[in-house]
Every structure is written in structure tokens, then in C-alpha cells.
Length: 221
Ligand SMILES: *Cc1c(COP(=O)(O)O)cnc(C)c1O
Image (cartoon, rainbow, N blue to C red):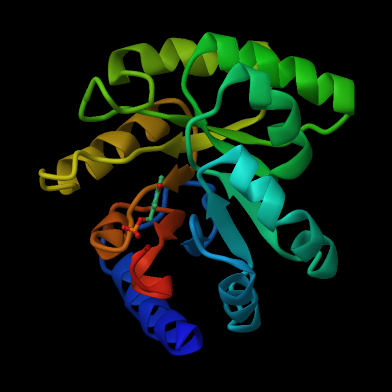
């Protein structure tokens, strides 16, 4: 079931990524991430067996319960944080994840930089941009993003790109276009954008990671 879905979605993804604006300079091929929040070990195993090697989790605590054993069993699996991060979880996050996509303020940059030095584990990050400027949503505002990117670089973080979650009720195209434009302006090439309902649209705008949950795994309980 997951294997079939993955194959179908992968075909759509590769077609979409060939039909749009093309990747940003320096970008690798687009990858489908399994956004696996709420799903348990049996589903994760099925996904890994289907060939998915990139996963995203929203909560540090949940990821810590689900992933360490699987990650040592399948060393090629990569795990990224795609949900909000609190400074007091920076230590666990640096130890567990291979990339953090949700850096959105200076205090998190500082906490991560300190932990990476302490652990000698320098994982890359993305800056989350609140393209719709929604008050309830994480992410730095577009206007403040360039300063945060600079701050993160100066703190020693490896900033690879940008991530966004457009407002649910809006056409996502303009948000994807904005994120692309912002990345280009700052010399970044990784774009994490697009979910089950709009990953093809995101791929047309040059997404390098689409985060797909329900379309791969079925609806969440
Ligand atoms: C849950 C989640 C997804 C996947 O959402 P679907 O609509 O189920 O594909 C993608 N990105 C983030 C940040 C999420 O929390």
C-alpha cells in the first residue's frame, strides 16, 4: 500500500519538477520526505522497505521514542525536524536529527550553535519563513528573514535553505514563488515546501524537499 503510493507520488513529483521553473542553481534533485508524525513503527518500517529514506517528525519527544533504534538499523535513513523547536529541546534535537528545518529566531540559533559545538555534531539547518505572516504559525517574517540568515551564518550554523507552510486557505503558488525568490537572493538552494495537497505545485517552483504525510501514509488518527 505505501509502496504503491510512493511509486505513484514519485512519478507525479518527477513530472512536476520537470515542468516548472527548474531547480535553483546548485540544487540537487527533488526528494520526497515522509512526514511521519503520529505513525508507529510498523508504518515506518513499511515506508523504509518501500524505499523512503528521508523522514520528518514534528515533535522532538515523539521522534525520540520512535527513531533511534530504526536509525541504527537503517543507517541510510535521514531524519529531519519539521515542527517547532524550543530552546530547552536543542540538545536532544541536535543529537537525534540530521537537519532542522524550523529555525525561526535568534534564541534558537544560539541554542543550536552552542549544542552543536558541545556535541561536535554540526548538522545543517533551514530557516522557516512565515510567508503568510500568520500569527499562530512558526517562522520568521519575510522582512526579517535576511537578518536571521546572516545571524545564523555568523553563529556558525550551516544554513542550506528555506522552509515554509503556506496558509491553508490560500493558493500556495505565490508563497512558493516568494520562498524561491528569497532563497535565490541569499544564495541558498534548498527549498522545503509542498505537502500532500500541493507538492506538485511546489515542485514546479523548485522545491528540493516535499513533505508528504497523508497521501503516503493515509489519514492521521
Ligand atoms: C504534517 C506535516 C506535513 C504533511 O502534511 P500532509 O498534508 O499530511 O501531507 C508537512 N509538513 C509539516 C510541517 C507537517 O507538520
